Length: 72
Image (tube, rainbow, N blue to C red):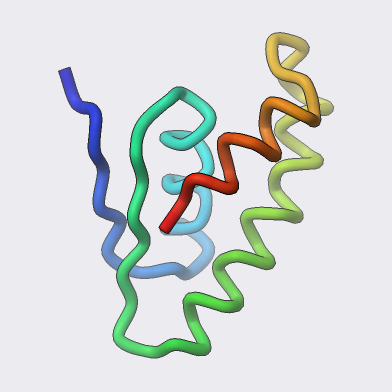
């Protein structure tokens, strides 16, 4: 079973992949060649979190925030 996930690229798709894996308990690292892209990815992930919590009754905002905080 996968426990660690490396996401290559922090764009729209990479941000969503990182979020989904973190929320499901994986240790996630996002890699991008530009530091600016990582900053934007973190912002996107935070924005997607609110949509995810609203869509998934199985996770609370607090749990999602804690799991997102583990993304490197």
